[in-house]
Amino acid sequence: MQGRDYRLSLKNQKGQGKNMLSQKCQYAIRAVFELAVQYGRGPVKVSRIAEAQAIPPRFLEVILNQLRRAGFVQSRRGPEGGYILARQPDRIAVGKIVELMEGPLVPVACMNEPSTDKCSLQGRCVFIGMWERAAQALSDVYDRTNFQNLVDEDEKMRKAETVSYSI
Image 1 (cartoon, rainbow, N blue to C red):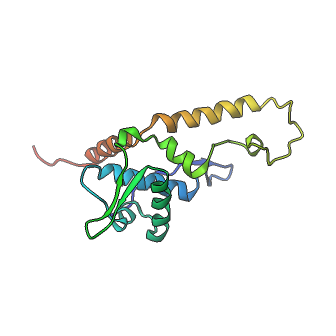
Image 2: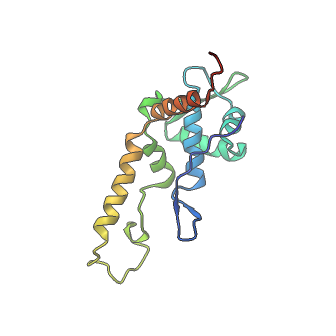
Image 3: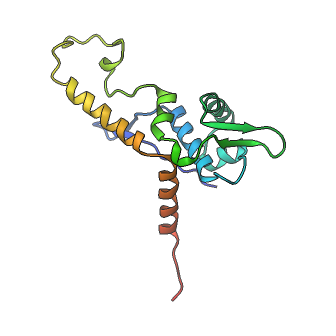
C-alpha cells in the first residue's frame, strides 16, 4: 500500500522546501490519521500503520508510546492487540498532536520563550506583530482541523480518483 504523505513546507528562494514540522511530528499526525481511518474496527497493528503511512516501524513504536502516554491512543496486548484512538476522531485536533510533538509553533526563533536568538531589534521590532499573527493563523488551522475532517477529505479524494467506465 502506498503511504499517504501530507507534508507542509515553505519554499525558499532556490525552490527547495524547508519543513515547518519535524519528521517525527509528521509521522505522529499520519499515525493518528491512520488510526482515525481504522476507528471502530478494533486495534490496529504497528505494522499496518507503518505500511499504510510509510513510517519506519521502530520509530513508529516510539511515537505511539508518546501518544499513549499523552492519552491520545490506547494499546491492547495479545494476538488481536494493537493501537486504537482513545477518543473519537472528531474529538482530536491536529493542533494537539503538533503541540505534543513540537511545543508552541513560532515562525522565527526570537519568539521562543526565553528567546534563544539575540536580536538587535528586541523591544522595538516592527515585525513582531506580523510574526505573532502568522503563528496564530497557523495554530488556528491546526486547532480547527480534527482527524475526522482529514478522514472525510481522504474519502473525497479517493472517490474523485475512482473512474467510472459505465455508460
